[in-house]
Image 1 (cartoon, one colour):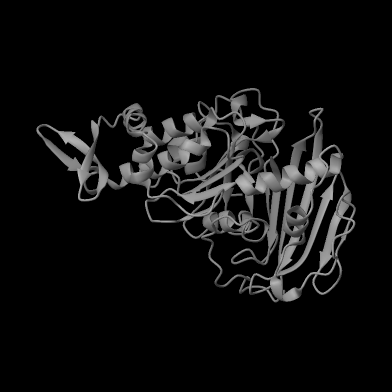
Image 2: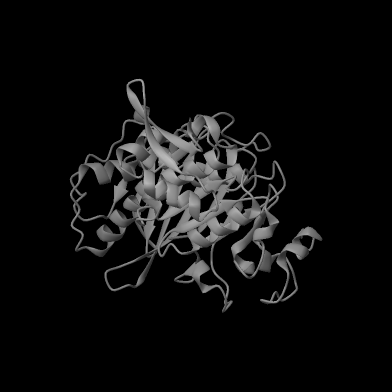
Length: 374
């Protein structure tokens, strides 16, 4: 799981911004945490405060460590407010070894204004296992990578981490090899998307987005999709309809059948997009999920029910950006799961006040009253 992320000189983050997902010692809503880390985080902030930039920064590593889809913005990569020539990224993870002992992993890298890799470093349990600087041979202590060509062609903009993983068959019986592979597999399965029905607006997990309507039909998920919508009090009766040379989803309305995607609301379309990804999410195939503008088209009750659904995921770390303060309740989350970003810093609610926040406190009222403005 991700423990901490920091970024500097990327877009609006000219100074170091640190996102710490370490859990506090609250004894309620423990299903929001796992192994001492936040498993469900809600990120609040005014428009332009950096919520989307935070997501893009956190998922930047997908572009060079994987072959998965990336829809991240590459223009104005470096901060206009800094004279530094590179953007710096640092990820701190915790992975469990075969004995369920925590193994810390730190991955750092820098990129220039064209998003070209300048350096990479990977540490496992405080040991540097991969180290690379542009135009210099890389070094690695991973067993099985000794005979690799250590010189990377600078014109290729190639990640050394990806190069090692793709060109070796590392023995998992070696603890560092095992953790290295877990790290790569983790990054290969993380997912970011904006919960708006706007084409291929996602990053990570796979390459290419299936036609959502055809995906539901081809996988024989129409009844499951109908039940999913019904569970959120959208009482649709769905059916498969032949139209020209393909099948579409229809809604039964009395004696008529109308095309689903031409009929339903924006909120229902967003929920349909969520359902598409839910097929993978519910199988625990996605270890880190970031949904930007999570509930911009949802009724507050639907938003709350979705958060409850996401809380039930046993191993998926979920980060949601939202403006919906109805979710700021200790009935649903806890103070260390709510975060506020202001363009320069991001902190959990319990770290934004001298007040000892208890289960009985009304977090929404405190937030709306400006209690967490710092």
